[in-house]
Image 1 (tube, rainbow, N blue to C red):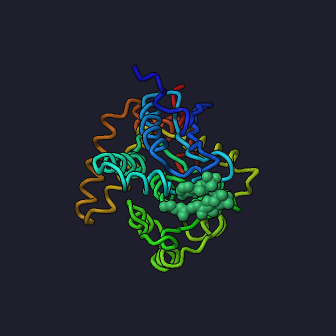
Image 2: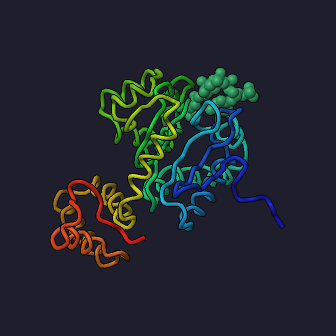
Image 3: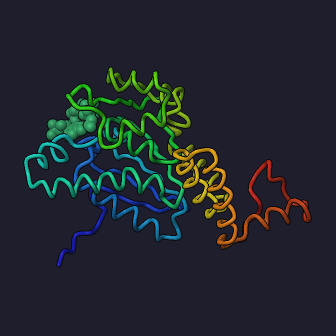
Length: 278
Ligand code: COA
């Protein structure tokens, strides 16, 4: 029987005060994404999804790096030379967690970029809902420097996240840039001094924890879906989704919010969330 834990070696998880801190844990290799990280991440985020103590998921890296991107040896060179079926399995699993799974994850996600962030790590960064970076974190689309294009789904993610001039500048030059610049071009929500990184990320997570989690889940899914739709389809989809969401909302938030504002006059929706049952 395989007694190896599904995660805990290349990916560690700590759940505290509603936040699931998921750490890429190969600091000696600058958290380069190898098969260990890929398969452990799939298992870790599956487990967090089902854990009611985890309200918000934060992804960060151990040591000096967020992640140096895909592991050139263990993700590219070795699988390229091995059984093509295993290579495909690895690439599919990687694309699954870095792209669809994170983008449509049912809980809010934050990338906490503590240091180096290269190549494939942009995929993780862009798939998270929000991102906070250390001011001195270093970012780079370094693929061009070693003879590939930002593949996986990195170029698409960057095209969606950045304006064309910035996207193409960094894709074509491979120049590095710091957290402050990442904030300026909208790649992260804000850059903060490294000493404040965890506290500011915690505050952001707590802000989302005040809101109805059912609404957050549907809101982020709707955002991603309507980006691909025509205006007419988007309007139909959003109205139908909103109706469906209210029917299925376990805490009946819209009714509560209206009652507290219109009848009880106990809060103002413009200034914060309605009072949720504990
Ligand atoms: N793939 C495989 N191994 C990597 C790696 C990657 N993406 N990034 C770092 N490593 C390994 C190094 O080979 C080194 O291994 P070793 O100790 O066995 O020699 C170890 O991690 C430490 O890296 P090092 O380069 O010595 O650290 P540094 O702090 O001086 O530099 C970086 C950090 C991130 C600037 C540098 O490692 C780097 O350029 N990495 C590649 C980044 C990249 O292009 N990623 C895109 C992949 S799509």
